[in-house]
Amino acid sequence: MSKIINIGFLDIRDIKEDLAAEISQIENIGVLIESEESQIFLKNCEKMNIGISIKLPKDMQTIVQSEDIKLDRDYLEGISEPVAVLVSGSITFEDNIDSSLVNEKIYSMIVAGEIIVPKRIVAVVQSKSIIDGQFLIYKNGYTLFDDTIKMSNQFLNSLKPNSKLAFNELLVMEDIDLALFEEKISNIQVLTKLVITADNESKLSQYIDEYYLIDKTVIPKGSKYMDNNIYIDATSIKKYKDNILFVDGEVEIYLKDDIKIDEYIKFLICKKIICGSRDLPKIEKILGHDDIEIEIVEGKPIRNNGKMILSGDLEHMEEEISIRNSGKLVLEKNLNYEKFNEKVVSIINNGLIIVPEEKIGIVKSKIIENRGSIKSLEENKEKLKEDEENILYANMGELKL
Image 1 (cartoon, rainbow, N blue to C red):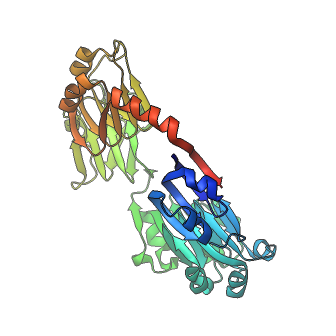
Image 2: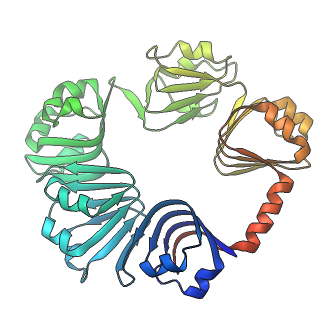
Image 3: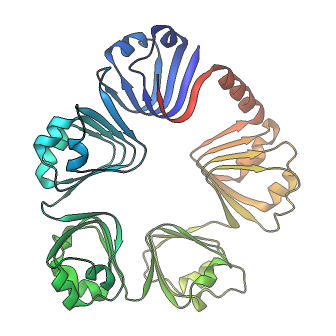
């Protein structure tokens, strides 16, 4: 019997009965598209970890996208018959679409991401949608910018007077000419996130719809804003100079003893700091407020989000390290486990660690958090051999049977 695993979009509506009889398991599927006939053929098939499952007529045309898609009137009018739209990303509806056109052209929508839609067609879009994500509504008559926009005077000069604008994410970091702003913009709507400097907030907040209800971050003038997690070491810190650093995420810091962080960063504001105890006194001098979460992790942090293999004598490992594993970490039989034991201070495991059976105890002694799994090399090889023999299709973005 065979398996189908790790498929983004799997369409089995036209599967033949003899092929269906060979399949015992369908696993790790983002979107599964079935027909009444295929459900009968696969009634004994085990289906595991299916994100979204939908039943469609066999002859229904589908539009499948693994990236963002924008729909406007011209696009929909070019569709001859109702379609099912399946998107891993976002669907943005332009403001020139009306409810009757959506009702006529779209049979259903499955979205693993977000739908951005003008208010006038909210009801009809919702009635046709299965969404694993956000449903964002912008006001009728507003021009939508669905990417992250950095507002500047140059941006304002490109607009028509008295524009009404909707932004998915808006950054207002530069000094804005208020007279130019008032000429070009009458109203702003922010759908998900606003980052604005304190001086711009005092000038512009009255023009932003429902300002005190939106998700916003107000930062000091002159701040360097980072919208994701960052890592600071002896090399990367050199790109900062007297900065007020505002990070919308975590900051991981590992510095050598002779580095003075306050010579590069004047103030640091973030959600969380991850550092060693030796760096903490330096970091405390530059914290912008007292309620920042601090996690102490000894040793130089090494992150693995893919596949990492440790083998041999580890000649490159000159200092103590801590490992954060969110992928697949393989420890080979020929690894110098004495040096591994000496240099690895801790492991936080959110993925898979594969290690020889007799060395599992060493690895477990280093783990301080384990939300993943640990397997022996021998067990893993047996499973890989079994999978190779049994897997019919695997690791594909889209598959139609």
